[in-house]
Image (cartoon, rainbow, N blue to C red; front, side):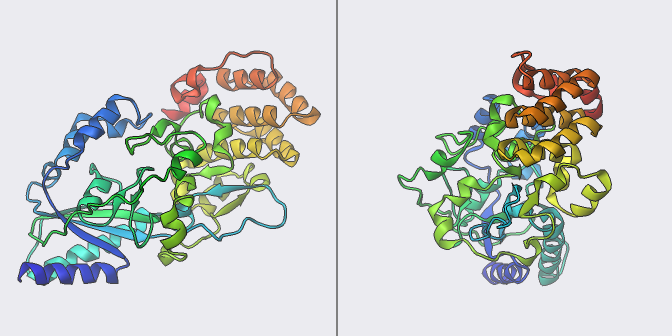
Length: 402
């Protein structure tokens, strides 16, 4: 089949499968692999060691190391709901907030079968098997640069890929193919201009001037990827976010004007989002956590990470109604990670009930890191574990991480 015709048919099928953004680029190495290496060298990846392995770095620098037969890369974007206009509950409850991509089904499980069907369509169209690999943020690809090169948009100051007609509320996926498709021209314009809304709005100031992030300060990293304690100096800045963060996207003019209010139906809110009741979920047990977040991205944080995040949101809420659930969590929870953050939250909320709960816990806490957090919350010491990182948590906590 003639290349142009095949490319048009493949793009049409991709759109039929829900990928509203579709572009093609060549298999040549990305131009900005050096930026990625420098980002790693500066330690901006936090504790995401899987990003820094030499094999993974080399593969990001050349897609043909992933698929030697690769001739074309199909880059796909699927929208999820714009969180603007989704109101906070009006009943006065204190709630935690989830990033919009996590409101519905886990996008990995949504996109995998669609990409599989798209590859099957390609093979049926040309009549034989095609070497292929496909990913949605699960493989060693610099996917935003590939998307820019495939004409889908530009990389904004917040490091997100922005499409001038759809904003940035979409998920990316890539299919490496061992056939030739007609490449699209790269997106050459930068429409951020002099706007700095995203940099100014970020509570942790993690957005860097070179359009990368200090991931170790990003709320999404802190609430999803980080497996241990959130650094004490960043806990208040996580605000009410319990999984991910949308702040830099919410303030972007391109999303205010153009982002879809609907998105793909697979990502519509379920019981997992967009708002979660703090008092209820501070005491969520394993059975209910697994039931509530079945097939949800929230499973990535695991229950212990979710309770950590919920504790921070409760402490940041300034709502004394959270003291009771936090005290119960501190008294009965098996995970030291959750107990230590509950102690921080109680110290932040303050008051006689919080003080009494901390003093009681001080007498029985067996985990060294959690005990240190209790003492800090009580004002008995100003010494903290360096950076609050997972490697510095107590022995019992480290054993659970292993």
